[in-house]
Length: 335
Image 1 (tube, rainbow, N blue to C red):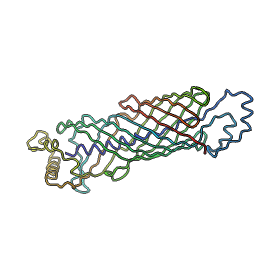
Image 2: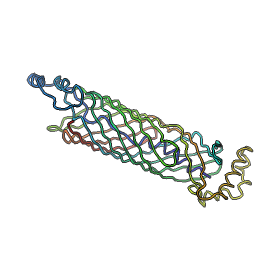
Image 3: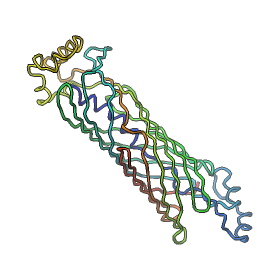
Image 4: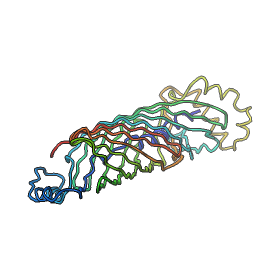
C-alpha cells in the first residue's frame, strides 16, 4: 500500500524544519568591566568606523568589545530522531481523502543531513538577524505493525530556506543568547512549502587564549515545532514494489481485512483495483499529521575564535531521543 510514501511526506516536514540550525551566538558582544582607567579614557574618544551595529560607537566608548557586524557562514548539520504518526489519509479520487485509521506504526526513525549557508548582521549591539539557505538529504526507517507487518526505508532531498534573530549579551566572560528562527521546506510532491519553528537558548563562558583568540563553551536547550500537517500527491509508480504487492495477494481472505469496517474494506478494494489497473503516471493525494517524540532536547557546544574574522563552532544535541551534530565556519567582516 502507499504507507511508505505517505510517511515520506510527513517525515520530510519534521526533519527539514530541524535541519537548518542558524547560530546567532558567534562572537557575542562582551562587557569588559576589567579595563584600566587609561583604557577607558582612550575608549571615550574612539571613532567607530562601521555603519553597524547601530549605536556601535556609543557602546564601544562604554567598554564593549564588539565583533565585526557582518557574517558569512557555511555549516553542516546532521540529526536523528523519532516521529509519532498521528494520522495518515489517502485519496483515490480527487478531493476525497480516506483516514487510514487501521494503519499502525511501530517505529518511525530518521536520519538527516543538511548543508547550509547563512548571512547574518548585528543590527544592534544586542540583536543579530540572519537569513539562511540549505540543501537537505534524509533517510527514514519505517516499521508497520498493522494491518500487517512491513518494514521500509525512504529517502528524499529538498531545499530549505528561512531566517531568524538572536538576542545576546555578555559580561565578565559570561554570555547568554536567545535564538529563534522560521524555516520552510520546498519539495515537488508538496502542494505548499511547509513551515517549522525552532527556538533555543544558550548560556556560555569565554576563555581568553592568546591575542584576539578566545575559546567559548556553552550549554543550552532547543525547542523544535514543525508543522503538524502536510498534504501533497505522488505517482502510483513511486509505491509499487513486489514486496508491497505481495501483501495484497488474496487480501480479502486475510484476518486484517475481515477486521476492517465496511467503509475501510471498500477503500482497500478501490486501492487494490487502482494498484492493478492504474498506469505509472496515476496520481494519488495524501495528507499526514505527525509530531516529534519530544519537542525539547539539550545542546552543548564550543567555539574557537581563530581571529576577529574567523570562527569555528561545533554543537551537539542530546537527550529525549534526538541527537544532532552541527559544525559551522563563520567569517566576519566590517560593514
